[in-house]
Length: 221
Image (cartoon, rainbow, N blue to C red; front, side, top):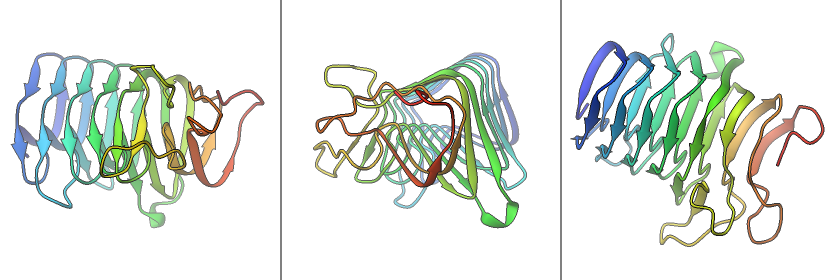
């Protein structure tokens, strides 16, 4: 890691910023908890490496965020703000914004199929202003056998003139409308999901999925 490497890491305050690492820019940990503080301006520099801000690569590990900010981080691969390959992922508060990656500008969440259906939970917080450049999932990208259960918080889609828009662009920076500005490739999405995405030819639907969407009518915006 460029900044911090630990088996278990808890951040209650302070700042981790301006780090560069071949594997991870800011924090690499098997178990990560954030209740406050800021992680920003970090970069994973090597091609094929993940997690500009935070990398949790532990099949039995966890990412938990209830406060704080993760922003302005970058990777050429997956998870500009957060890359998590873990069996527990929970966001109840905080902000993940203005991060950049090829896939999963804000968050990239990966679960191996043999672990079974793992639930990614979001009950609060905001994910906004992130960019997937040349890939998919401006705000959040969920891969393989995972479920996204979102009952609170906001993940923004794309809206012209809205600085909080998550977006997908091509490698040159031009907008791409069919790769999921807010979410992409979530195997199953449950619950009420609030996405400020304009459903028209300019902004696109903001959501792409492999199978089905579940939830009450009007849950998608």
